[in-house]
Image 1: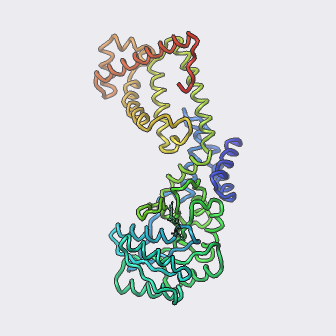
Image 2: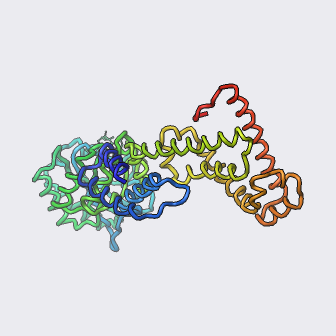
Length: 417
Ligand code: GDP
């Protein structure tokens, strides 16, 4: 366990997960992994990756989290975050999201320090066809928010989204303003907008906003960039609050609910947490290949081997998006995996219905219609399908023979062949 855990630790740090989060994560992974029964046919280190993957998902809240709507409208969403993280853009995206859900929506512009920010929100509002409440730069942000809320109530608007002023860094004035706004608005949601590129610093940032203002969740923006996603882990861990949405582009449509499993795949894929699986996979393939080579030389490839190969391919699919991120595994197309999974389920039943002798010696089946019929009946397949399976095996054997001849000519095929 020690070495793979060390690998995981290093890889998580490389994926920009903050150190305290990494420590906690590795601790709980070790706890969960030790004493877990190893599944037959899966190497312990591969299984460990599954433990890591599941732990990442649970650390990010497990399930997708939704907006809490208020019983009496409007549902008020207060947006917080530093300057440049994509807060104003997120306001527009969220408004469009609500509209698509059939909710009427209103935006409020309170960034009196940057008239350009007010203009930006008005432009976005026009784009998504949602009214924007603004009162220039003369009134205080709290006063503007109060008036916006009043207007939304009068109009019977379902959702009120309040954009606020950001700063380049966390500062007391910004926090005070947010606190006051929270007091007058009594929002259903306080969403902190976090830039995915923030990396390790996200932990401190989320912590500061949560302690000072109190958040109900986060929106992670710029997930379309090449950030490693580590920041996403910090949010829930540091604040106990989920990420609710992710921004995946500059367009107003680029907002999606946050799915922890997708982010876990990304974190695993971006760091090299999976590199040791790759190593494990390589060595597993080598063992299999050596075993196979022996069979080829002895021309003994049988149904047991066939089943093993199908299983190996199908197993690659069982972890969905995760394994396709492994370098070297990306030559296997999703379609090949799906096909393997399909033919596996068909072939498996038939092979299981064979006697051990039949599995090792396909001749027995090839020669006996009675045996073929029995296999078909027992596996719930047709005799034609059993016939197909047998000819597939013979085809494989023929290919193996060719391969063996090539090998005897001194041309050893590489593992990647
Ligand atoms: P604010 O200062 O926090 O209000 O940030 P803005 O909403 O003005 O966004 C800052 C920049 O980030 C703009 O150029 C946006 O187009 C861009 N942006 C915002 N969200 C995303 C996103 O999800 N992906 C990408 N690629 N760019 C984004």
